[in-house]
Amino acid sequence: MPQRAGNDPSGIPNTSEIEMEIRDMREKFLICVTKLVESKSYNSKVFSKEKYFQTIKEVKEAKEKGKKSSRDYRRAAKYDVISVQGTEKLIETTHRERDRVRYYVHKEELFDILHDTHLKIGHGGRTRMLKELQGKYGNVTKEVIVLYLTLCKQCHQKNPVPKRGLTPKPGTFKDLDSRCQVEVLDMQSNADGEFKFILYYQDHLTKFIILRPLKAKQAHEVVSILLDIFTILGTPSVLESDSGVEFTNQVVDELNEVWPDLKIVSGKYHSGQGQDSLERASQEVKNMISAWVQSNHSHHWAEGLRFVQLMRNQAFDLSLQQSPYEAMFGCKAKLGLHSSNLPRETVAILQTEEELEIAEEQLENSLWIRQEERAEVGADRSDIDDDVDPTAEPSTSQGAPGLLCC
Image (cartoon, rainbow, N blue to C red; front, side, top):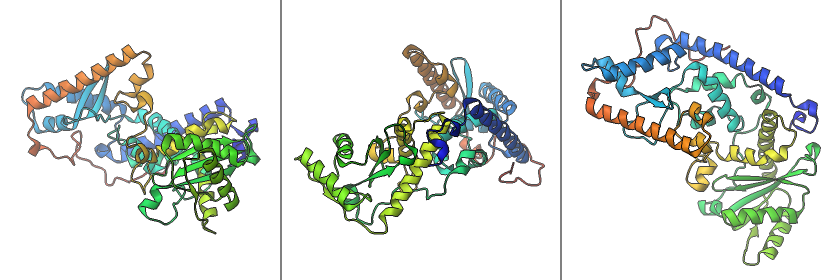
């Protein structure tokens, strides 16, 4: 891990420096997005603030018209407007899927949405960010995500490592279903008080990880943590480790001694392959810890391990085609009200359960009303061209560059 993430107070930017850096990123991002919108004329999915509120106005007017034009039908088929606690938001037409609300946002809102998501997933890349955002937003595109990522200094400072974590040893599905890997990552050069190591546990089938701080690389300390893990997640049949045959056997022996009803065996040691997987695991975790301590102005990586663990487990994995959390538990990780369908602005001001109930009722009523309106209108779907932006007008631009360099 870079030395700036250690115990040296001068290694971590202070609050004012962080705020200045974020402010500078926001300004540059807004300039880039403005150029992107202008280059695409009316064909951009990204709204200016003026276009956003104008579209809300036009959608409401289109729904109130007695005699509707083709343009009105297209607009009504693509957009809806909901109101929650006095705030009107433009959303994607739900078509009877009230449990899935996708919001449209304007360019002035984009940076905060992207920045918060980027930090939440531990400075994840484009694919992870897109998977995280596409379920809630209808116009957060790959282009704007890439624009944001080009401005993140911490991402450019990362040591290049493969995106995947530990690679399971070759074997059948049954083999993976009964294996786990345990590593002890050395943090002695960057000790956090009495904590000098990190226990890295990974379930091979789901790639679900657990991270815990260790005071020493001793079998009894590792066993104590593994017992907590096994009594919650269940126990594998085989325990693998790249920390040495002697250490692995000692951990397995102590596990079997402390828990006589548990029978677990040591996995085969693969010479030459284990160190590579350990390096990948070590570097990815250290990169995420470095990002966490800088983002949270902290000098104590041990406090951030559980948060890094959640970031890694909820990140989309290409080989799984879902996150490790989903693979392990069958659902997405819950993040309080941020996992709800409520707008960000509403979530930020809620304080009590009564306020939450009112907001959820307003959202549900608003979606129900919009659904009833669509049923009454009975728009002719054959008149709708899904590939045409209903706000679009003929473009006079000679080209639309895919990405602007700022």
